[in-house]
Amino acid sequence: MSDNQAVSFEELHSTFAQASALAEANAFRTVPTNYYKAQGIKADAVRKPSDEQFPSGRIIINGKVELFREDKRVGTMGIFISPMPGRTKTGKFDREFRLYNQLVRALYPEMKSDAELAGVPADQLLERFQQYPVGMFVTETFASEPDGLTGAKTYQDAKSDEEAKALREKGWKPNNYVQSIGKFKN
Image (cartoon, rainbow, N blue to C red):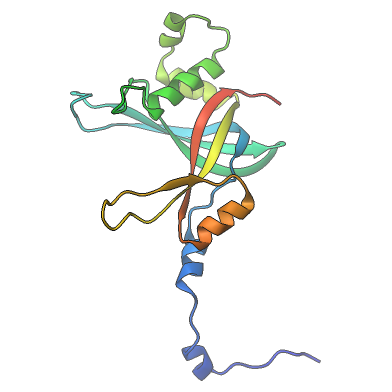
């Protein structure tokens, strides 16, 4: 005998899902902050419109990687890199060039000089990335809604599942960011 009770269409007419639950269910899946084995699976490139730093436009490579923990696939994410050195407002190399530099060094450990590494064509780097895994430290970073006065968002890395849950409940949006790339260490 079943304990289930029938529900009428009239009752269903006044039954709604929660907007916050729908937003969470529809959100891009992320992985927790951790060190992962990463394997490139595809890449494409675009030339961005010209700007002050790049009068002829900057080449940005959008790579897709699969992430593994203990040889179990835990997710897929995108990574943006560029062989063309860009600078931040403070004069440091930007994330796209910094990650490109780390990737070429991780995949070509036999090359010791910067001149040798600079001679690796970007297409060969991407081919090698699809053949050999690298290590990636990935953070799960949450962004607040833009501030009403300044329009700026606040960003916070979740260091535990409890922190991630609390930030999700506050309505912050999760995203994964590659912080560093290196030779894969078991």
